[in-house]
Length: 280
Image 1: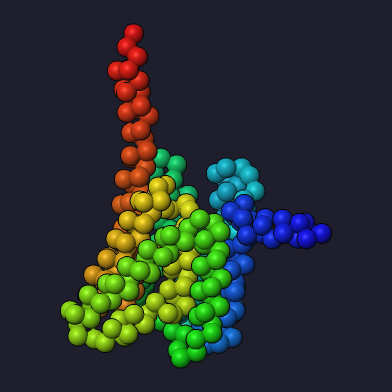
Image 2 (image 1 turned 30 degrees about the vertical axis):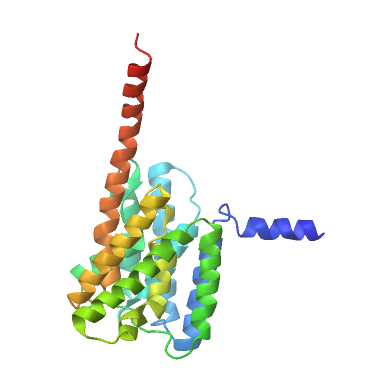
């Protein structure tokens, strides 16, 4: 009985469980909403989720003629519902629609280059800045909500072998906060404080660790996380309050293009090496 329970727990926290990230992101929503009311409204968030799921169903059926696993669409929709702010309903639907559509339209050699929700949020901030803003609430002085999310987030990302990405970004952010302090004269804790907010929890546990839009090698993933943190610092110094989104939007696709190009070169290099080693 104990071994069966242990095996069940092992399967639940394995990389094969595609519903583990949706469960965790729902936990972030619930903790943030109960503690600080991070949502604009449940109805807007449900609209974002519903739009993402509908677009995923329709586009997968039209293009691949099959029924999709909806975990990814749920994560995209709920991320949009948590991360954007608008008095209107339509930005929630449009942002989710852009996010899911980008997965099918903006591709190179069979892979999409941007994290869908990150791309869509940046697109909306550029084309409709008067209608939307992004979540800026922090956990405040209450430590336990942040601890719950961080402990579970760290454990889950470790189990799915992505914790090194989160750890690299967090370490880089804290180190670069010291650099920003020297440049701006702001207190060090004030520069570190943004990473304690719910927005950053989604960013560090879901956006920068997205398996579909991260490079393949572990070293490369850590390097990309570091450069995202550097770009985020540059945007932040330029007084851009949406710095992490734009940083990932700039760095992420460049890294993906290089990774895809280098991967395509490996068979060519291997063939050339074989020709030299075993000439006819």
